Image (cartoon, rainbow, N blue to C red; front, side, top):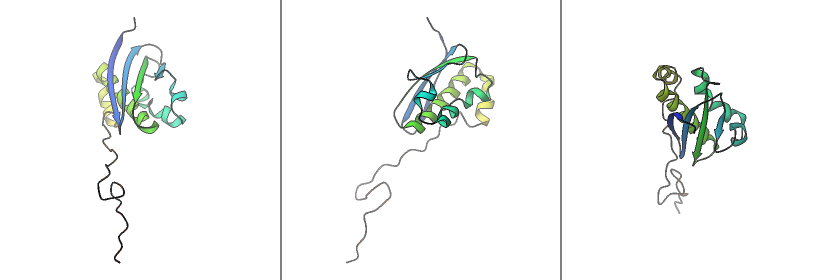
Length: 130
């Protein structure tokens, strides 16, 4: 039986990531795959590891991440937010380093909804004077 040391929920746009922190040697699983297999670019896989690098926990924990909703960029940032929250929940001494790098702050930028009588969220239909 594997015991979860901590849990963190990460959110970005419409993506939600559940992160389970476990004792291990640095293995990360995102929806059953490695981050390099799951995310289309190497940059996204690297950016989600940043909280571990900042707190010097790269090879200390195994991470099980289940992420849903949104696209690859939102999912990557949701994973990063969830990892940061899990590390902060596990050890409060990680909190200042995570906070100073902005990993605990929820990026609340969302897609604006489309309004009626308009072509998009802000774009209007073309005006014709005659």
